Length: 142
Length: 335
Image (cartoon, rainbow over all chains, first blue to last red; front, side, top):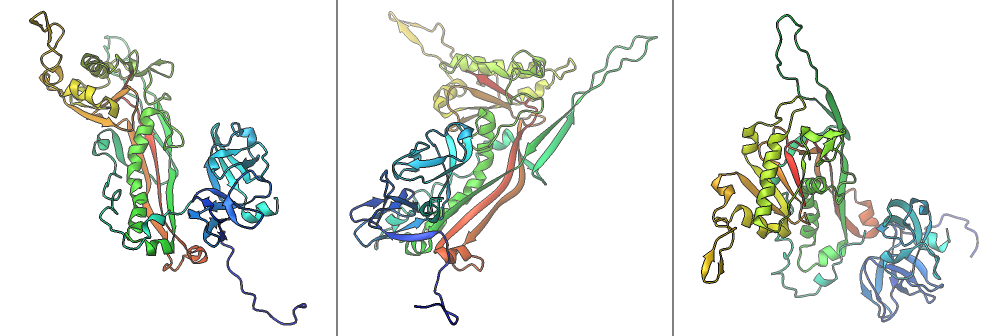
């Protein structure tokens, strides 16, 4: 390949915040759960493993069979949840971690796996809004 | 945020006799008794409205010959009520809607829109219990106190000790409930207008009340207000002892007009009395915009996002608020 010397028809699609990933064999991802990709590139429930990369929230429940895909919202939505350690307004903008695929397990304590988002709104001592990193933001470690 | 989870309605050959298990319930509407205790007819034209009223005018007084005529004034009160925006979106993948063997996904999604009709009732019980289950903030009454308060502005509310927040006897027995009921009626009659005269006419108080109480107290209240023969005849030593047992129901004997409302939205043992015919109802809803439905379906001309993602949605919006008027028509029995 070489630099273009004429117009090129580059086929693309809108960046609409949705992707499908192949679910790891015999692994179940649940709709509404945090999901990530493992070292091999398969979709798995988010966990506390350093090599797991967050990619969003599953839109459907899928049991992996090596080829079955799951749609994932990868645009980085805002969720309302309890964040352990987020009981004061001073924790606004804190990084949020989650050691499971359950968004209710969010915590401000650094975990082995990377942060999944940021506290973007303090509501009460037990309720915060967390804006999740989009898949691209998480990958870029923004 | 999560889409409709349709995985269980996609199998071929599904029968649909029970597809409307929830759709058939049709309970997303305000209770018909709500209009007796909440003014639902006040419109709004902006995102916050200021209301005002004059307090009671003075009464006639003795004018002694040779002196100047007695003179008195009255004050005024202003209060404001905000309008909030309410909404809900339900999204699904278009293929789930098409492949849904029950063909009820869209109808079910519309149940979320019907919920708009429940808002007034949810507002009312938030105001009643002082809880922010629906409303983001609970307003104060125009006199600066809560909906139910013993004092307002550093003095007894409505000029009577305990204001419209009466300590109750409990709900364990018929006599406790009836005692508190009559204490409530008597308290209504004792309200003062701030100028030394009764606030409400006896006819207004005697026109009847709506009693709103927790669903868990249903038996106790129906026993108190509806059971004709009350108390238990206790047999001791072969003779029947009727001591302490009332054999008739005073509320019915006195032809009191009582409407009972056992609400699943209340817990505990506090209960509330609302006059059926108050000059102004104690709570009101401010209606800015009725419910509006917007959808993004694959056939719509403006559904870019649906075409980008394959996800359809329908959403509803409404703008409304709720406020507290001067609550001289409401009393809480605080147990």
